[in-house]
Image (cartoon, rainbow, N blue to C red; front, side, top):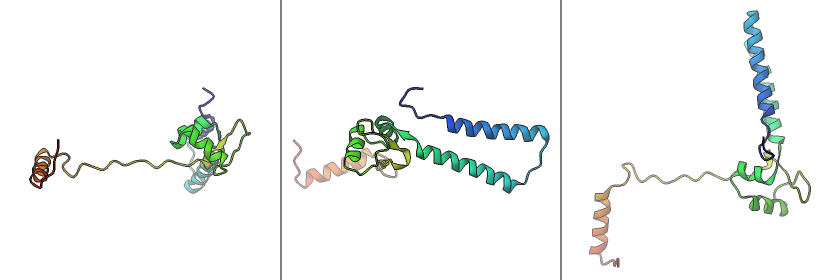
Length: 134
């Protein structure tokens, strides 16, 4: 694992625990109270999610996770807009504090996509109205 790759150990431990529980129950033919089992599973999942949100990330990891550049993340830390969980020359960010860059949705070309006939008509109309292309 490279130093810039967040640890997957909490997820692997979570999965190993619940796979082990399932195997043990299967071997013993255990009948369980579903609500109690779900409660235990949810508690473990909440602990996993909290650990992931508390993970400390380098600038490079934070940039990859947020979609912003390392320079932008560093600027936000310097401006006090993001809390530095590390040191002055070795900043770290908690995963839960990261800004998330909104996804850009492309506009569809229309219900049918590109229509060369419509495009030709629009060009012809513009030329008739005196638009110059040249």
